[in-house]
Length: 148
Image 1: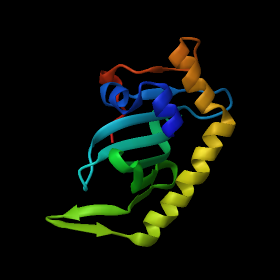
Image 2: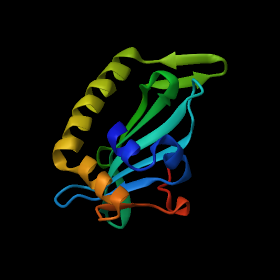
Image 3: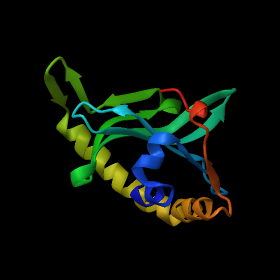
Image 4: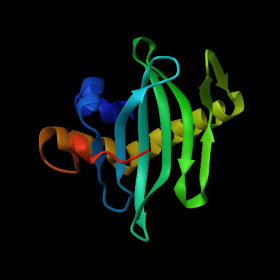
């Protein structure tokens, strides 16, 4: 995921506009900055989407908190609309940070595999093509954000 973000303007670029990539044979991929995380880092949503009965479905949508100085990608939540599944791994309750360690570990493992899959499926190359102006997706207009 980092390679995709870096190819398309890095974290500063992501703050200005979401990333939308398509690779034939796979669901579209979106990456977007969605705010500040519970630890003060950048919240980033990474999701595949498909349409079902006119509704945009996330399959999945993983929200991570990126702590840039140390490049930590800390899972916050996992959502899969087709299954009606939403799991929150980290939340803030007042001044208290609540962490569900097993879920954090599970999402981290998933993210590692997903990252490898995205590379093998051609999404990193698609990001490089977009950056060079030869296609594969776009930098969406900031007004086109997918609601969370």
